Image 1 (spheres, rainbow, N blue to C red):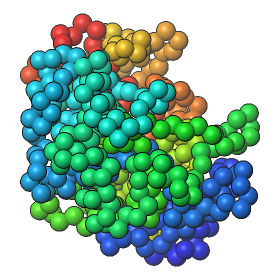
Image 2 (image 1 turned 180 degrees about the vertical axis):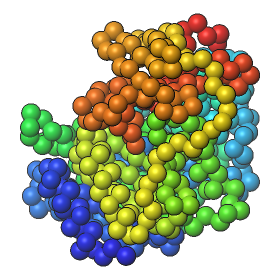
Image 3 (image 1 turned 180 degrees about the horizontal axis):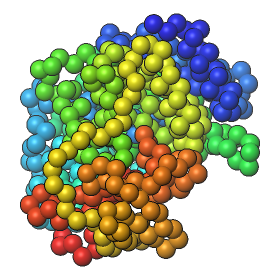
Length: 454
């Protein structure tokens, strides 16, 4: 086992090399936190504000794992089922295409397959009232463009988790944050995890930092909107998140709740073997198991919860710099797992023998974004063409094409490689009945074929 001085030294080396104000991490097993360390500052504006493992920070999309964990608790208690229609609990639930609303299930919402377009976490003008989750779940789905039918295509959606959060609170008869506290936080001993910013701000907080013209600066922006509580508005500590991770590692094989979260639901269609379960990313393989967890980040803050069942260990990481340091973090995290005797991570896609249809040539659009691309096949290869760029790709797996490796930090969305990959990837999504390509995923972002029947 790595001792605290070794963990501190690894974090300190990362901090100094990458000009990071502060970084903290904890290693855990099925029983909870094992060793925690922190180095640096909560804020460079406060030289005496040392970062500690019990310092609160905004966990952003790692909150999706907490929401899915809460859903699993209600499934285990028999209060709801993964495949029950959302409308059975929320009869007022509507979609922009009204006839598709009855087909949406909790499973669709928590696996990003409800059909909503990818959305941003916006805060301007948003309600901070405790009923904001309920209001957003009712008002936003009918006016949100859809990229596909329920269950058809992976499309990362914060709104889907907002709807899921309201479904849970409606079924339990209490507010989302109170439900989480009663069902998850208190039983696991999570004493510093809050969805309410007015509570979080009473504790010392890790501050966001941005690299501005070569200088690291604190970002003083509130960025709060209560409707995002189930998807990204949550504050926690590495120690508290380790307790959630420990519960996942300890899940009994017969558990129909937590164990279900790590079952593949959606293929992200990358050159690497990355899937999404229910509130969890699945990949890479390591030994006899698959690592699973979630990242959360926004300008000037980055967090990760990672579980490795093969070694029985996990890690939580938090620092106050941006997504541009993603690859450097991955290297430290992998080195830590290797030092613990973990298996080498393997992102290779398993071989498949199913027949493949023709390459997905044609025009594809991302609804409501103004973004479109054209795919042109050259025998087995594909060119991805937009107004300002052409990228040539070759087949790397069944219905997946990828370009040569490109440093992720040099690319901007939608061209920036997805987390876990260093290559621009495009993957085809085919209709189960006809085999025709209905969508493609460019680095995980869905595009609908322009002439496809909806």
